[in-house]
Length: 265
Image (tube, rainbow, N blue to C red):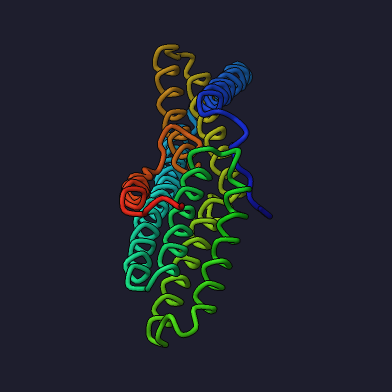
């Protein structure tokens, strides 16, 4: 994924702890710099530090809200794609049931396998690459079955089945793009964490200048900001974090297809 940096190789709890460490380190560095500056010059105490700290924290809050909105919209899109794909497969199954045997059973078996493969690729991350490859093979098998149906189907029926397959293929491409490419850009992550470190450093600097700091307040602040950053990271992960997209629509469809599709002789 060119230009994209993600934390997918780290578990969410580790991302949370690393973020807490970064924030606490930034505050501590800022505090020590503030103490040194206050000792060197009394004019530092008269500088408009409060307004600068407030502006930096406001900018950080804006960036957090912006990034959270991006991650949330992508999460909602992935949920909708699951429902749309289940509906597209269900619509294709309705059209397939109008065909005569043995074409009907052959195509319904392909649809059932397709749903099984899609779920396996999502619920078992190690099988994702194989599931994607097999999904594309099923697309080709379905299309070749429709194309070779000949006198078994009328032109309108073939057109309807081809349209259903195209819709399934389009949704496959959309879901694949949502997983592999439609993520928060690496530059945004760098900017967000850099701004968080800067804002926390300014906060520590303010405490160092005044000569007063509260360890409990600092820890609470670090945990709060780290929790928000970890949540954004979690929402950006497709089926890897704590907040996962429900596959219930496909699971229900799988159950229905298994119940109504006769077993192969």
